[in-house]
Length: 137
Image (tube, rainbow, N blue to C red; front, side):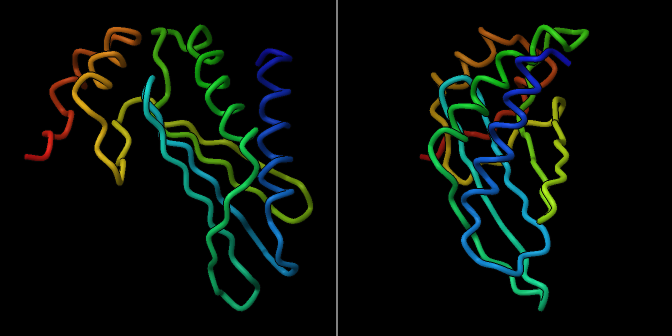
């Protein structure tokens, strides 16, 4: 891992940590689903009593995820970009990232055909291109 990627991990983790307003949370997850011109994010934290709440961190977290995706491509042996990144964070500041490279993101919204075309032009994945969900009519 490069120092730039380590710094982006720290920036994302700190931004998510700072976005958690409630005391007593036991774990938080934040997912960034992305293709080149479209992304969605979802944050969820859990309290000790099992309740779950959504949250939104500062905008710099989104920017850092977008930069992280681009910077990680050269580190992948096949030059692939990840589609979903999930950060898991605990109150003591420990965090881990999980990256999904071989499954298309499950967006709630629907990216346009031109956005998918840009993704596969930028990061060719012919084996996944046929799995793009159909456009709504």
